[in-house]
Length: 263
Length: 362
View 1 (cartoon, rainbow over the protein chains, first blue to last red):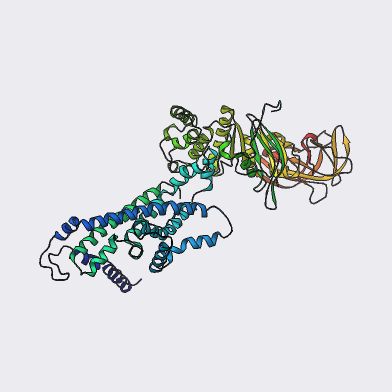
View 2: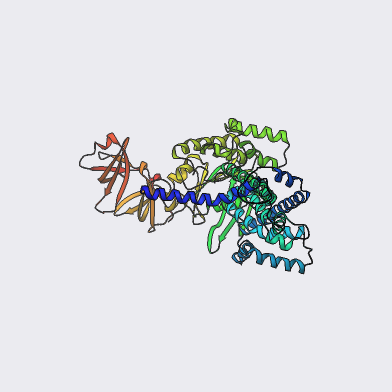
């Protein structure tokens, strides 16, 4: 590589980094501006917007509501996804490939299509728009991700581990819970956090399936329609920091757990 | 069941097929309590399938498996009092050494103090006491193998299955572990069912070796039996190095069978069958059973030969000796390196005890 291309490469790299982070930096900065209007110049700084967010009971309750949906979705997705992977992984049967493709479809269908379909289906089965509908909608979307991650991990587990458990007196259920599940732990932690983020972040499904109570993205959208305000920047910054922490923690704990297994 | 109280396992006419392939073909065999029995054979001979049927991981298509008087043919692995040391050890990576060993005891519903006591006892017995709180990835290959053994012995099985457990160890360690394993078997008095494709391993450790080939038993006997009195060409060639002699039975002479081998009369013995005059037979003669004489001996059965090639191997020399004028009538023999230098003009005489030339059944 010549000196020129090396310089060119690093310029491109830094340009990309700036492109990635400047919008985020701007958003964070504006949250500290002591003025109702977003934009430069900034004459005075304040943390009032953050105080306002923390005191805003609507924002806080919506935040809690979104968290509850994310947690319920995650648990449900992990259970169904793991079950699906454990069932689809080792067993051979007719139509396995088709069943697998169908199960993975929700992950790639455009959100808007999936949201409309779910809305129609919810009405058909007389499921009221609201928390349960959102949870079910998010779960349908998340299950394939869990199943894929768990299946990948499952495929690296030596068959002899389960046989050894059976040999030592475990029936297939005990063997699953005591040997396979611990082996899947890193995959479950990773997939679980991914589910949380997917659910917390989702706007389209929550918008179509939600009732009167909005989720956080829906609330932010509603607030935006009445004009951009630094309060939104403050909310976004809080969410940004929390997701970053969650993501980093997931990455770290997955690496630590992976170390403890042979593969 | 029947008065046969020393039989711990009866493999009763068992057949197992995988599609069109017959993995185990009407295997009928009894294993005695306290025996170290090795199933030996090339890959695909059915030895591992037999082991897996004993463990409960495969179900026979025909026949029964009787364990200590109880028909366990259709019992799942968790219900039979049989434990296994897996080829890759299959230690649970998320558990410590102690937890691995205790696993089988917990599932048997033993009390905490008893589990602790038995785990301590086994770790002590296998010199693993210092490793109790380590995880498997912090152990060497030999230590893992011992943990796998401790874990399988913990529930006090009636039969211990070992599926090529030395395959993953390096050659130097393997020799040492062979001795250890035999010693452990003697001290515990357990019945060991060992599976391997390594003939040396089988000869070193076993009370009895069962040689399998294409799903059938070729021969079953003590290591000495198999080595010196092979019943078939397969056994003779699979275990050790041997001379195969083909010829026609001419008759008998003082109990020995006389075979016409390329015009030369050679004497042998058949051990589990009686070939008749005129039969075309193959016989096996181990290299170390051939006695070489640099001078013509008094024995009337000694045969004159000519050395066609010699290989110096340190303490002894391996000689290829041609008998008569036929190109392929060659016997390979060992000779002390010192004696070998006394051979003049490559001319020597060879003899053997008739008992040592085993006439094979095929």
